[in-house]
Length: 102
Length: 133
Image 1: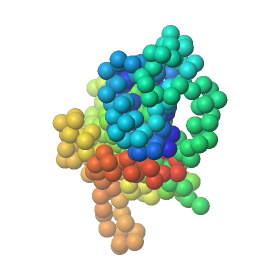
Image 2: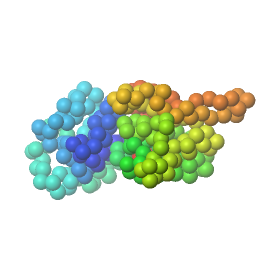
Image 3: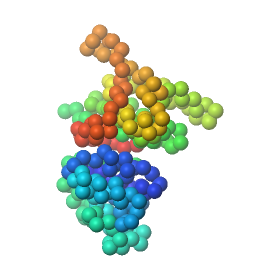
Image 4: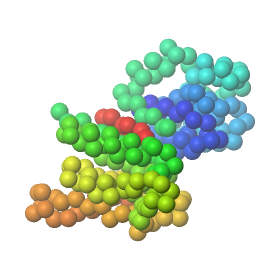
């Protein structure tokens, strides 16, 4: 399953709730303001690392949305894979189902 | 073949239009004879809270409509226990939504099932289509 989150974790609880429900093997793609959570040192990092290392959830962040907000790839938390729009398409193809967290 | 549709409700009613829009789409979808269930988590649990009265706030109370879902064959309303607890709520704070079981002499049965976060994850995983509101 591919989970898509588009809200900042500092404004909404969508990312936290998503991470609390994602199952092992699921993927989570951060787009739009959700990429703010991907920055190394942000306070959501604990939950992201728990998902990546503890629960075998893959986390992705969309590069055009990182770039739009001035976040360089080296500022992205280790373990998060940065993908472009083509990568976004690949994720939707690779996952049979998609669930959005508004 | 009927597909499993889950309507995922995560926002409180009245503050935004999501809850009402979700309910309207659910009623439309019911006409297409798919296997429809509703999930209420995070602030979404307030959508089926007892005693809603938005009159003084100038809005229409649409909460009685949830009682009609059973007549449309929608009998599975999943509520996440952790979301209730986080908000100081219990199952007693929810509307007693029921349906008539046509396979059991139209006995009234509860539509609301309070489940754990882990069970909610499983229910999400079992769906063909999930629509988020």
